[in-house]
Image 1 (tube, rainbow, N blue to C red):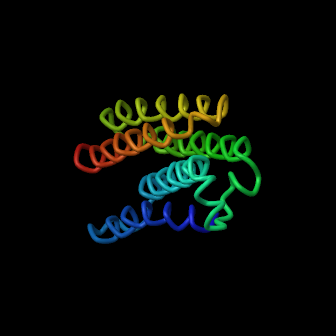
Image 2 (image 1 turned 90 degrees about the vertical axis):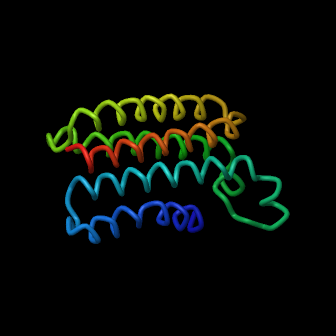
Length: 151
């Protein structure tokens, strides 16, 4: 899990540094974007561990999939995806986002809700989920950027 968190933090830090760089500092919108990226990133990393069980066994990597089982990893990955969906909606509930954010993030959230259900139902789908999650993360990033330039 520490490795999964490290990778997810590397996805999160640019939001924080970017906000500081443009003089926005930390604020609720930026914090929720960073937290959403973090949760989706950790979820994807946990699910990637399912696809790497055999290789991880050779190198004695203690992934969730190896230590707790692939079902536990799929449930945790799916739960993290759903938590990312929830955090992405906090700015909406606070009324601090515009229509472009709502449209793009709504689509992104639908992808992650589907992926959560898909991986929880069958952990053998991990390879597909990890690939589609990358697309969902890219789409989410586009939504975050649009919010920044088209408030």
